[in-house]
Amino acid sequence: MTRQELNDFVNANLFAQLATVDQGRPRVRTMHVFRADAQGILFHTGVAKSLHAQLLADPRVELCFTSADRGRQVRVAGRAMKVEDDALWQQVLGARRYLRHMLVEGEPRGGLALFRVLDLEVADWSMTANREEARFVKI
Image 1 (tube, rainbow, N blue to C red):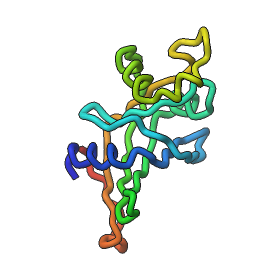
Image 2: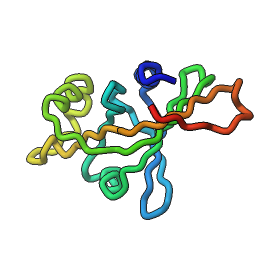
Image 3: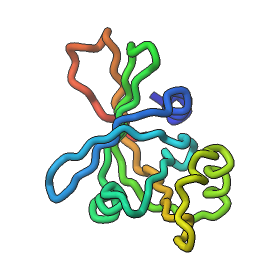
Image 4: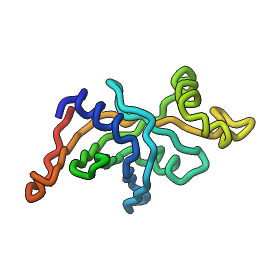
């Protein structure tokens, strides 16, 4: 899978399962990813949430994206790094207007944080490859 193929797949399937590590234990939740681009995979969360603390303590993550017809699954492992970019944050707020109701007055960026997953390793799976072990490839 090329980087462009990954970006296209993620941008067509923006909901993913996100796994983190919390004091040595796995934690998984569904996330609405903002986008994938040449710089990585971008998502947001609240700074008061345990996810924010988990990412700051241990940036290792894995995302699992599934196609709408469920015939394909793409797993992406990497490091989630906090993004401090006001212009990008304005893009997120412009595209996700529902976030404006969640902003906390007086908090930087309204108490929300942006993260970008970097150093991507990808495993592409489909039913035709069901019996094969997932192989992660750095892209």
